[in-house]
Image (cartoon, rainbow, N blue to C red; front, side, top):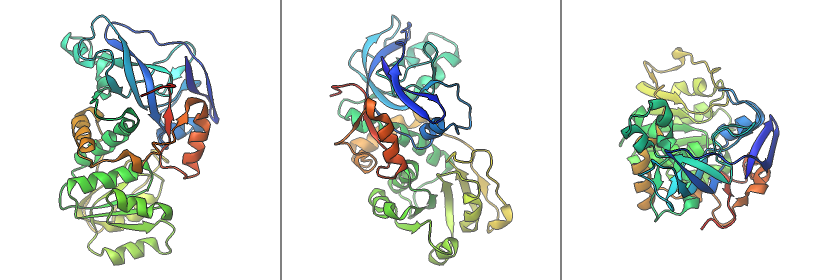
Length: 343
């Protein structure tokens, strides 16, 4: 099968890799679509992923596939089901950084594995693989992964109706945080990002926007919002970004770094804040919010067209062009059609 492989840092190619093997608790899926991630994927491509990568590696984690074959003990998913987060594991000489940009991938019947008493490490991580309702288009469903990650993070953080939120970063994750805050009923949702994302940010739920290149940026934000914010999320993760924004957190507020650009290198100086604040380090769990994200999509509260060009997906062989379009900020995220006839 064909897959997008990072052969070494800086070299992304499409090449032939071995098919994954299907065991008793797994289903073989034909991958329909996948979306690019400007955080994880680009860091892996550039050799900057902070958690280590064994190259060559099969890329991609925002993928959706259709079940075409099931293992002997699979009983909770069936042929024809659409599954989120499918991917090929390590095959042959290729490692897998989730393996979503491959023509075929696996989905685990983690429900059955748990019921049958299989060791937790065999199925727990695969809880991200969930059945997508048939009324949700598979191309749209690629956004489920980003939305689940960010919604789990923001709700675990404690963001709720009536709160004020400052989001730093206007990429796919930053825009997702704004959309979630709007759906949760936040009173003010302010973003700092690239000027050309201003209108898009308002379309997904932001109530105000500041160009990150604004002269005396934080003075401008202070003047507009002298009371500060209940929550601040840094969706970029560069060294000094959140530290510079600590002046906006209310006494008793909560801040968090979601982005990974300078993972492990960020420093916060508490005296920059107005008082006592909490640093959120609670992570996220995609599986715990899957049903809520599906409901938001079905209710029209999350619209993939603000993040993806659904009418002009890239083909797998155009994967380098897809990432180039994201890096050049022509797209928030790029949609990649993996199989030839996905619908």
